[in-house]
Amino acid sequence: MTPDSRPQLWRLARIDFDRVRRRPVLLYPEGAMFINDTGKAILELCNGERTAGEIARKLGERYQSEVLSDVIEYLDGMEQRNLVVDRAAVAP
Amino acid sequence: MTGPRILNQPTTLLAEITYRCPLHCPYCSNPLEMTRAEAELSTSDWKRVFTEARNLGVLQLGLSGGEPLVRKDLEELVAHARSEGMYSTLVTSGLGLTRNRAQSLKEAGIDHVQISFQDSDTQSAEHIAGIRSVKQKRAAAELVRELDLAFSVNVVLHRQNLDHLNDIIEMAAAMGADRLELANTQYYGWALKNRAALLPTREQVEASKAVAEAALKKYRGKMQILYVLPDYYETYPKACYGGWGNVYILVTPDGRALPCHGATQIPSLSFVNVREQPLDWIWQHSPIFNAFRGDSWMKEPCRTCSRKNLDFSGCRCQAFALTGDATNPDPVCTLTPLRSIIDEALELNGSRPEYVYRYIEKDAVAEQAAP
Image (cartoon, each protein chain N blue to C red):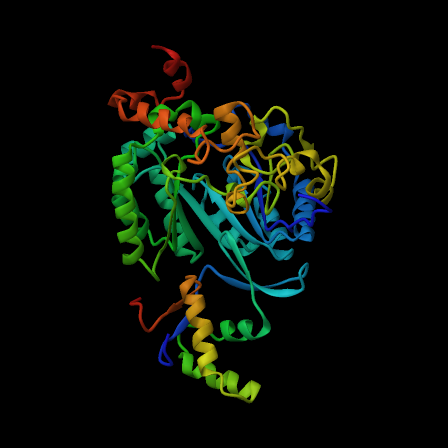
């Protein structure tokens, strides 16, 4: 991922709240991944149109700090797991 | 293992809501003896089971069968699962998925629809399924795409269709699948009876590996492809269901709670029905769920093996089916002398003439016994 990537949450994945474990969770076929509030905030902005740079800017304003490298690193990890796709790199 | 055991929370419930099915696949994972419709759990039973599973920590719900669409209360069950916060997958043959039903399932909150296909070749597919079904399956797939539901194609692989792997992958892509599960036949129950006709050759397995790897690259980011080698050709056994009683619960149409599909075939195990006990008691205390937890039941070389926390000594049902003792190591493992059982099956397989194909019929069992 780069600042120009347009990350999109895999369309089979859905963010939910696990009331048993009391934490946000990403659900997808035959899997579940527990995420923290920051991860949830990032993923909620991944609509395939916003760039990673724009996502980082939005979150930076919210947290009052520079978060671009953290956002890229997080999205790289999610892309590795095939849970986020870079719309800028994949033809429709 | 010593001291009190800290149990995992289960993550997955497979609800086999009926055994009724229009298909007759010779590798079916359902037991040889099936339950009559009138013995099936009621709507309220299933809803209670889903809630109990959710309270235990279950997040994934598979609605399976048989063909789950034969149950008229499927939509109600889906809506209940959604309200409980579970991710629900409809595991269907596609037969019976009319526009009305697909629409109402979507409204009820189904997350994901998985349709089984038997082959890319229509004639072969219908031969395997034992019924004309391809047209209806394709129509179902089109509906699922049209309604923009998350869509997986599942194909069970074996000797008859493995050479078509490339066509199978292209078929799934052309249908617009988000995900393709390529599952190799597991040899228990029906499939073990038909093993001689289903087990692929080593050449087929090698060729399919290359095809799958190329497709994985080609479709990265477009269609997720899951491909696992048949375990007979592996060096170590699979961590069956993530370990016995570790993450997975299966409930049969008549309400028996099981750690896996094959458990009904191990005669030393006694079953507890969800009509008699709540699921959390079954998970924590039932003899069946505790039968193969930890390592005190394991034999050597497993008990002192460093891999025991990776594969948990493999599949109990496979160990039982092939050796008669469920506590034996899974014969797939090359670290046990029992491996010779698998190697013999593979050798025999290499020398098998083509005509075994014709045994994939309803009366395969009887015919195979003949010389």
